[in-house]
Image 1: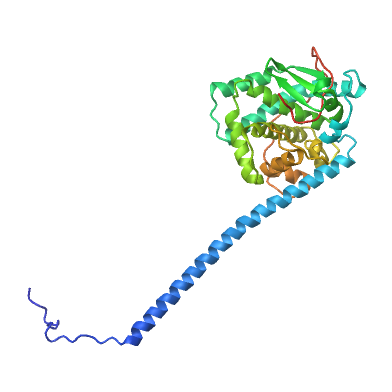
Image 2 (image 1 turned 60 degrees about the horizontal axis):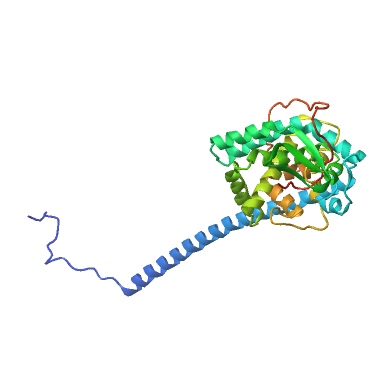
Length: 334
């Protein structure tokens, strides 16, 4: 092709001379720019990591303060539940003991409300953890709704339980019945046992239990087995049921005091555990890490309140049941 007039031919064109110092200067500038960019990137990454660490530390601090408030309130509260280790040290009580009878009557009176609130809490958790509403899950809510009896049992001492052969009955150790001195404390244990009843012999809620165990493990830096995840989920349903109950039954007592009653039986001196349960204080820590709103209701820190479940009818004064006697404060076993 013919060259344009203004262009020089290769023959006449002279090659530009580039001095070595220019090359060195350019290289130095490039290295310096890259170093600054890397330093800025590393600084940003460190900032993000520090933010995550600080966030974790903030939650840990909130949980520790909330545990302190819960146990301090228990000591000052005339209706505060007896800690599990104190209940374990007591001799068994006969089913006709006055404190046992009073506890059984409280459990009977609160059972209808506990069924409503436990079902609402379970439905929220099923949605929150993305559990499909299978036939098995629907059957779980049917089983929960069919529980109708409270039965005191001296041999259960500081425990409560639901047996597969008696799925409509919650058995309470007589020491537990006597040790749960408030409506809030009793309602939390009822909701716990209702969750066991809902799960049933077929394990309809095992996927939810697994999800709660995994989330709690991350939130509280714990390793939680599937069996312990079941107990922890039952405790979580109980705590959420108590929060909803408090929201719908305003009174003159402080929010911190009433909320503390959901956890007070975990304020032990001897913090023992077993294969099925986290230790009482570890249970409390895991619950507060899972539900920071519960912790803030104890400490009074500001928070975005979750909407409480809608309109629950007031608890009936008394419900007729075939059997009613003592109940004991401890995480239920089957």
